[in-house]
Amino acid sequence: MTRLWLALALAVSACAGRSAPTDGPALGTLPDAVGPLDALNRRHARLRRRMAARGYGGEVGLSRAFVLEDRGVAWPLDLDVGECATLVALGGGAIRDLLLTLYDGEGAVAATDTVEGEGGLVHVCPQADDPRVRYRPYYLELRAREGLGAVMVAHFRSPAEAGEGFDGLFDGVLAPRVPFRDVEEHLAMSRTALRARGFEPVGAPYLEHVAEGAIVRQRVQLEAGRCYVATGRSGEGLADIDLFLFDAAGVEVARDVGSDVEPSIEHCPEESARYVVELRAFEGAGAVGVMVVGGPRSTEAVATPEGSDELPEDHRRDPGLALGVLVAPLVDRGFDAPVFVAREAAIVPGEVRTHEIVVGPGCAVIAGTASDEAMDLDLYLADETGSEIDRDTAVHSTARVRSCRPAATVMRVAVKSYGRDGDYALAVLRAPPEIDDLRSLRLEEVTAPYRLRGYEIRRRYTASLEENERFRREQLVEAGRCVAVAAAGDEGARDVDVFLRDASGELFASDSGNAPYATVARCVEEPGVLTIEIVIEQGSGGIELLVLDSERPPEQTPE
Image 1 (cartoon, rainbow, N blue to C red):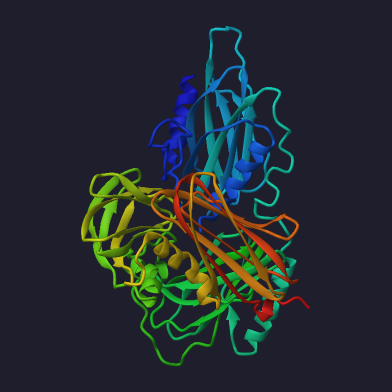
Image 2: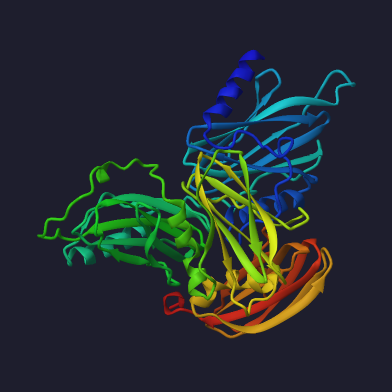
């Protein structure tokens, strides 16, 4: 028993991330609100719905951790005797291979998972010879055998005879292990064309399997006096990928967010430094590749900053500069310039720091950015009475919360960090005067990516709903067009979900993440009527629904 405690203590302390939940018992309740693009939460919600549909009882706990490659995180569990416990995990970020191991109280392995990739599942039915024993102690260990990132774990409890089995549970949720052949061929074609311009590859292409919403990053050393082209390509299953380039300080210097699967950006750095190329899977899942090529060197001698070619892999960015980049699109859309509350505040994993801010008259966004992409930054916003009114606990190095007040009001923001120690920046941005309520503020943000792609607002609906009450509307969609649906609630609506169904009633698209806003978008090949369904899963109050549409981009038009 002593060896088990020591082994688990080492496993926990070895992880530079969150060693155990700090907000209550293991596998406690996960906060409700997450960011609009928190793909990990949406994917894990699909697993939880499948578990419930297969008869594995109610969900009794949900938690998350941040794990580093080949590091472990462990949780103590007290499992009921005479019932079965199923623990379902899913990794996000750059996690490519996740392992779950369940130990009993004596240190013996009680269950291990056999799921390949970033998912995991263990199932055990504790028994005891003594009828007075009501539960038995266990420990669950999560280990990232490859990659790093966030992991969400759900705990289900069911009778021993319940359940339909786990075959196919992770189908369509894990990043598909499809061949890279198509991606490699597409990159080869681009490489041939670029070589004709005098460009040569900078290292080997980076290939990866991704799920929708996933992010792939590649660090590359760029030299002053040369121009570079970064290219992203994908295979079957992906309909839209985007490409970004960040300098050594984490500042975005180039992007390609067109609605296609062939993004490309070009940059000629003035100073030699380590850059980051970031590919994001905006729609679909499958194989992707990133390639960087460099042009001929300039004949002019360009000074190289001392030590720039020796930047560590975990080089940290200036959080103040990174926050400026994060909110630049808001400023471009009419928000006031950020008023900084903190530019470089130190924080360690699990620590909570609070700041007072002023909101109103009008609406505002409060945004935070961490100094390291391996940090998980959470924000909690409370009103003048101390009541929490908004939170962003998405597993990401950035976070934002929102509020609207008729008069200037002092509010409090709590900042919490997981993963690694580092710094953060925090700022307040006042919304344009025409945005006068929380629903409009949330909708402005979640629809911005679509409006920038040429979508236009066609319909607007409002309603007041109770918890689990549904609001339905039908929308006629012409052939060759794309439709986007966005819904947002006020402060009383804590979880808003959107479902899109075709003429036969089959589910066409959905966003059921735990957030007070939701959005889906799909392109159609044949004309028809789509049914839009909105439901408040938690809370009640007013909602607003926007329907946008756009012509299908030529790159997506079927031959």
